[in-house]
Length: 545
Image 1 (spheres, rainbow, N blue to C red):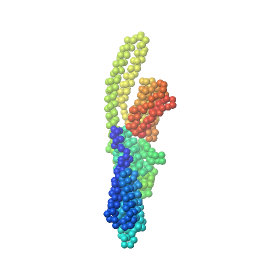
Image 2: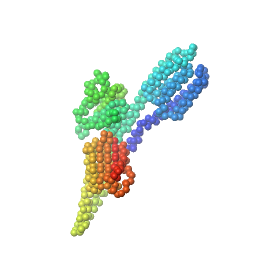
Image 3: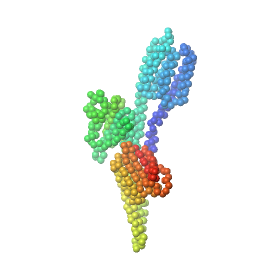
Image 4: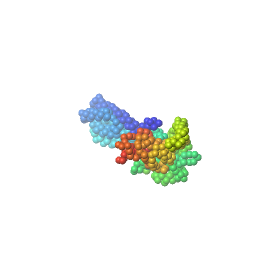
């Protein structure tokens, strides 16, 4: 499942890079066509350049060679510099050939078109304005004198260039915005992984929304109905000097009420500078959020959960199209959360079925032989009356009885185990440490934060990693003491499994615990093995939450 999620969640930068490289090749090819066509035209009609004929041929040939060189090495980065170089070439060729009447006037439009559809409105309009000013200045300065000067063409062409340039910039800017919006919707649709939990899914998508709108904060308030009670959750991503801060908080109903006071179907864009027409609830929210401008749209899920999505900016105002797109984003985020919850539930149901099957297997294939062993030892104990070995046989009989009780308790616990939470994870690790002490005589010191806010899947995976690490201590070392530390930082879960120094002589072989490494990698985390100067070994696991 994780492999499928990673396949569909290919890095956006990789896809955008491939698209820009393809656009760069297309632009480079069309530049070659225009340059070669221009050279062919003045060759067919040699009267067009009335002066500087030889220089014009040489300059056009140089432009053709430069265009071919760009085509041979076309990549996405060349789109940023080439429009301005095209403007300089067009200005130079206009100066050589008839000024405002030059046939190379249309090269300016090519440069504007490329800038608009590769960099957006601002770059396109800047190139259009610069092209108009350069054309007027150079065109009029090098225009032919006398009857060769055409006033009408000298006046209409700058107006035409500026008007067409502005239209291209607007259309190109809209195209760029639509591409970014589609890319964001695609990324949100792909951002769900049940192993990472709902909080990670929500935070990852809020982070994308924050970056798209260049916002200061992005908040999602959700009211869920769980077991007849209302539960209010606040997910928040805030941009600061030290990077992004992500938090998830369970709120009281009275604290959440002001954030959910707007009508359930109302979308709003608030601007403090034009707030006279805003409802009173919007003013109250602006004060609560400490925001000059913000946008808020409703958030709903098919299971009856609802809430609101808030995007807080500094000064920039939200347009109507921004609000409409934000409504689509809220819907996409809700679908991603629903997918995470659905797969999460399916995984838990499958886990329950598998635990029931394992408990039956333990009872039928593991407990029964120990019962047979206990009966045999009991008979041997009775037959060894007055024999010095009877005491040792009695100790083995007690050990077999204790093992049967532990196995039966373990089978019952596996069958009835509820989804593990952060609190139950701490308890389970301490019980596992006690079990290892009883079975193997290893003293295990456990240090855990008493309250760990982690998803059930992450708690289960952390417990399995601790169990695997302690098993490695038993199987691969002669240590009689071990150490487990589990703590939750702001953005990650940290796990340390360590054992006392090596006692068999020599240094232990280099190793990386494959199972723990695979589990951590599937959760987006990593591990490293630390060796102390005294020969101790510690496995450090870090998992994002």
